[in-house]
Length: 198
Image 1 (cartoon, rainbow, N blue to C red):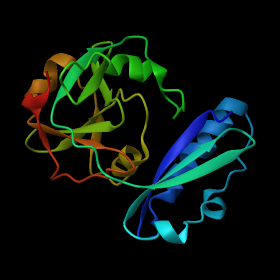
Image 2: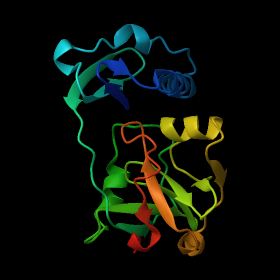
Image 3: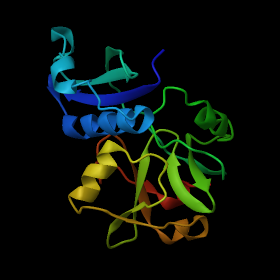
Protein backbone atom coordinates (compact mmCIF):
# COMPACT_ATOMS: atom_id res chain seq x y z
CA UNK A 1 0.00 0.00 0.00
CA UNK A 2 1.34 3.39 -1.01
CA UNK A 3 0.99 6.06 1.68
CA UNK A 4 2.41 9.21 0.10
CA UNK A 5 2.55 10.86 -3.30
CA UNK A 6 4.13 13.64 -5.30
CA UNK A 7 2.53 15.45 -8.21
CA UNK A 8 5.29 16.49 -10.59
CA UNK A 9 4.95 18.81 -13.56
CA UNK A 10 6.51 17.88 -16.90
CA UNK A 11 6.67 20.40 -19.74
CA UNK A 12 7.59 19.11 -23.21
CA UNK A 13 9.35 16.14 -21.64
CA UNK A 14 11.31 18.21 -19.09
CA UNK A 15 10.68 17.49 -15.39
CA UNK A 16 10.10 20.69 -13.42
CA UNK A 17 11.52 21.57 -9.99
CA UNK A 18 12.64 18.02 -9.29
CA UNK A 19 14.98 19.03 -6.45
CA UNK A 20 12.05 20.29 -4.37
CA UNK A 21 10.08 17.08 -4.87
CA UNK A 22 13.17 15.06 -3.99
CA UNK A 23 13.64 17.10 -0.84
CA UNK A 24 10.06 16.43 0.26
CA UNK A 25 10.29 12.69 -0.45
CA UNK A 26 13.57 12.59 1.51
CA UNK A 27 12.03 14.47 4.45
CA UNK A 28 8.90 12.31 4.45
CA UNK A 29 10.80 9.02 4.51
CA UNK A 30 13.23 10.29 7.11
CA UNK A 31 10.53 11.67 9.42
CA UNK A 32 8.15 8.74 9.08
CA UNK A 33 10.62 5.85 9.10
CA UNK A 34 13.80 7.38 10.60
CA UNK A 35 15.80 6.07 7.67
CA UNK A 36 17.37 7.61 4.58
CA UNK A 37 15.26 7.64 1.45
CA UNK A 38 16.34 5.36 -1.40
CA UNK A 39 13.91 6.67 -4.05
CA UNK A 40 16.08 8.86 -6.29
CA UNK A 41 13.57 10.56 -8.54
CA UNK A 42 16.00 11.59 -11.29
CA UNK A 43 16.85 7.90 -11.77
CA UNK A 44 13.27 6.68 -11.52
CA UNK A 45 11.15 9.08 -13.56
CA UNK A 46 11.50 8.36 -17.26
CA UNK A 47 9.00 10.34 -19.31
CA UNK A 48 7.25 8.11 -21.88
CA UNK A 49 7.53 9.34 -25.45
CA UNK A 50 3.74 9.70 -25.71
CA UNK A 51 3.86 12.16 -22.75
CA UNK A 52 6.78 14.21 -24.03
CA UNK A 53 4.74 17.06 -25.55
CA UNK A 54 2.73 19.67 -23.66
CA UNK A 55 2.03 19.87 -19.94
CA UNK A 56 1.89 16.46 -18.26
CA UNK A 57 1.23 15.41 -14.67
CA UNK A 58 3.32 12.64 -13.17
CA UNK A 59 1.81 11.12 -10.04
CA UNK A 60 4.52 9.36 -8.04
CA UNK A 61 3.08 7.17 -5.26
CA UNK A 62 5.40 5.61 -2.71
CA UNK A 63 6.12 4.10 0.67
CA UNK A 64 9.41 3.11 2.26
CA UNK A 65 10.21 0.28 -0.15
CA UNK A 66 8.07 0.64 -3.27
CA UNK A 67 6.67 3.13 -5.72
CA UNK A 68 4.55 3.45 -8.83
CA UNK A 69 4.01 6.20 -11.39
CA UNK A 70 1.32 7.35 -13.75
CA UNK A 71 1.35 10.08 -16.41
CA UNK A 72 -1.59 12.11 -17.72
CA UNK A 73 -2.24 15.28 -19.67
CA UNK A 74 -2.83 18.24 -17.38
CA UNK A 75 -5.71 20.68 -17.54
CA UNK A 76 -5.81 23.39 -14.91
CA UNK A 77 -8.92 23.49 -12.71
CA UNK A 78 -10.59 26.90 -12.86
CA UNK A 79 -11.40 28.35 -9.44
CA UNK A 80 -13.68 31.39 -9.23
CA UNK A 81 -15.09 31.19 -5.69
CA UNK A 82 -13.91 29.92 -2.31
CA UNK A 83 -15.59 29.27 1.00
CA UNK A 84 -13.92 29.66 4.40
CA UNK A 85 -14.25 26.37 6.31
CA UNK A 86 -13.01 25.90 9.87
CA UNK A 87 -11.17 22.90 11.30
CA UNK A 88 -9.01 23.29 14.39
CA UNK A 89 -7.94 19.64 14.39
CA UNK A 90 -6.85 19.10 10.79
CA UNK A 91 -3.32 17.81 10.18
CA UNK A 92 -1.88 17.37 6.69
CA UNK A 93 1.83 18.12 6.96
CA UNK A 94 2.80 15.24 4.67
CA UNK A 95 1.42 14.58 1.20
CA UNK A 96 -0.72 11.59 2.13
CA UNK A 97 -2.66 9.62 -0.47
CA UNK A 98 -5.47 9.40 2.08
CA UNK A 99 -7.05 12.84 1.88
CA UNK A 100 -10.33 11.93 3.59
CA UNK A 101 -9.96 14.68 6.19
CA UNK A 102 -9.75 17.28 3.40
CA UNK A 103 -12.48 15.66 1.32
CA UNK A 104 -14.82 15.84 4.32
CA UNK A 105 -14.21 19.57 4.63
CA UNK A 106 -14.67 19.99 0.87
CA UNK A 107 -18.24 18.75 1.26
CA UNK A 108 -18.96 22.06 3.04
CA UNK A 109 -18.08 24.23 0.05
CA UNK A 110 -21.77 24.59 -0.93
CA UNK A 111 -21.92 26.42 -4.30
CA UNK A 112 -18.25 27.49 -4.24
CA UNK A 113 -15.53 25.93 -6.39
CA UNK A 114 -13.19 25.20 -3.48
CA UNK A 115 -12.51 25.93 0.18
CA UNK A 116 -9.97 27.82 2.25
CA UNK A 117 -9.26 25.91 5.44
CA UNK A 118 -9.12 27.96 8.64
CA UNK A 119 -7.32 26.44 11.62
CA UNK A 120 -7.28 28.19 15.00
CA UNK A 121 -8.56 31.34 13.30
CA UNK A 122 -5.63 31.37 10.84
CA UNK A 123 -5.75 30.94 7.08
CA UNK A 124 -3.98 27.79 5.85
CA UNK A 125 -4.51 26.29 2.35
CA UNK A 126 -7.22 25.38 -0.13
CA UNK A 127 -8.15 21.73 -0.61
CA UNK A 128 -5.35 21.26 -3.15
CA UNK A 129 -3.05 24.27 -3.11
CA UNK A 130 -1.14 26.79 -1.07
CA UNK A 131 -2.14 30.44 -1.15
CA UNK A 132 -0.36 33.69 -1.81
CA UNK A 133 -2.15 36.96 -1.13
CA UNK A 134 -1.54 40.46 -2.48
CA UNK A 135 -2.04 43.53 -0.28
CA UNK A 136 -1.37 46.05 -3.02
CA UNK A 137 2.39 46.16 -2.39
CA UNK A 138 3.72 42.68 -1.72
CA UNK A 139 2.83 38.99 -1.88
CA UNK A 140 2.53 36.98 1.32
CA UNK A 141 1.75 33.37 2.13
CA UNK A 142 0.14 32.25 5.39
CA UNK A 143 2.77 31.02 7.85
CA UNK A 144 0.22 28.45 9.04
CA UNK A 145 -0.03 26.48 5.80
CA UNK A 146 -0.88 22.82 6.35
CA UNK A 147 1.55 21.54 3.74
CA UNK A 148 4.75 23.33 2.74
CA UNK A 149 4.27 22.86 -0.98
CA UNK A 150 7.17 22.69 -3.40
CA UNK A 151 6.12 25.84 -5.27
CA UNK A 152 5.61 27.74 -2.00
CA UNK A 153 8.99 26.62 -0.69
CA UNK A 154 10.74 27.70 -3.88
CA UNK A 155 9.12 31.15 -3.89
CA UNK A 156 10.05 31.68 -0.25
CA UNK A 157 13.67 30.67 -0.91
CA UNK A 158 13.79 33.06 -3.88
CA UNK A 159 12.45 35.91 -1.72
CA UNK A 160 9.51 36.49 -4.07
CA UNK A 161 6.98 36.02 -1.26
CA UNK A 162 7.13 36.24 2.53
CA UNK A 163 5.42 34.12 5.17
CA UNK A 164 3.38 35.84 7.84
CA UNK A 165 0.30 35.17 9.99
CA UNK A 166 -2.96 35.71 8.13
CA UNK A 167 -6.01 35.63 10.39
CA UNK A 168 -9.51 34.92 9.16
CA UNK A 169 -10.79 38.39 10.05
CA UNK A 170 -7.88 40.00 8.16
CA UNK A 171 -8.30 38.27 4.84
CA UNK A 172 -10.52 40.96 3.34
CA UNK A 173 -7.71 43.48 3.93
CA UNK A 174 -6.00 41.87 0.94
CA UNK A 175 -6.88 42.67 -2.64
CA UNK A 176 -6.45 39.32 -4.36
CA UNK A 177 -5.00 35.85 -4.07
CA UNK A 178 -3.39 33.20 -6.25
CA UNK A 179 -3.56 29.43 -5.81
CA UNK A 180 -0.14 27.84 -6.20
CA UNK A 181 1.04 24.25 -6.40
CA UNK A 182 3.47 22.16 -8.42
CA UNK A 183 1.18 21.95 -11.43
CA UNK A 184 -0.32 25.45 -11.39
CA UNK A 185 3.02 27.10 -10.77
CA UNK A 186 3.06 30.73 -9.70
CA UNK A 187 1.32 32.76 -12.37
CA UNK A 188 0.89 36.02 -10.46
CA UNK A 189 -1.44 37.24 -13.21
CA UNK A 190 -3.98 34.50 -12.46
CA UNK A 191 -5.44 36.44 -9.54
CA UNK A 192 -8.75 35.84 -7.81
CA UNK A 193 -10.45 38.89 -6.32
CA UNK A 194 -10.60 38.67 -2.54
CA UNK A 195 -14.36 39.20 -2.68
CA UNK A 196 -14.67 35.76 -4.26
CA UNK A 197 -14.19 34.38 -0.73
CA UNK A 198 -17.44 33.66 1.12
